[in-house]
Image 1 (cartoon, rainbow, N blue to C red):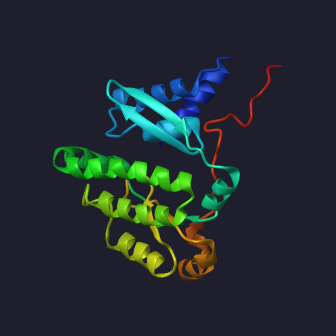
Image 2 (tube, helix red, strand yellow):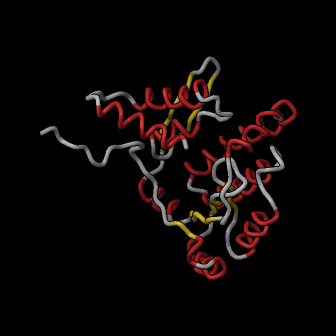
Length: 224
């Protein structure tokens, strides 16, 4: 994954005694995956893995990338983290095949992609205004749109799991990454989460929190 690429680059640079910027780590990770390995992917994963936190990332023409911090106070971030759940679908998949199909269909999907781009600004406003309930509904809309980009993004098993979650307290959610399996990120108000956990079973939920610092080295060996 792009997180692994960013982390490896970071470790290699530190091994050679060099400290480089987060922008450089993200840019070079994109070069490794897209230009050298020819992966049919975007750049968002590399940049958020490098920078961390809650960011609004703008990808402009001519490879310009602007990373901006979302202005959320600490209590709002805590409230947001407490309203999100990460649920395993039980399905593993090869993201590359799904992304290749999605990329092939970009010309016919352009209106839908532009609508999804507009949702980013709506989501940003919802977060910064503290309207987390709207965030849940926007996630639902984003998921419905994302499924239309490729027939391989969802399947009957994922759809059944998702709508079970909606029926039992979640307001919305979407698959993480390319789709086809992996994890669902759900918005569920804290007071409804126990009901949802009762339906899912504990083994399906993965606890997580926001990582503000992005890529970091947690252990560095000393010479001698």
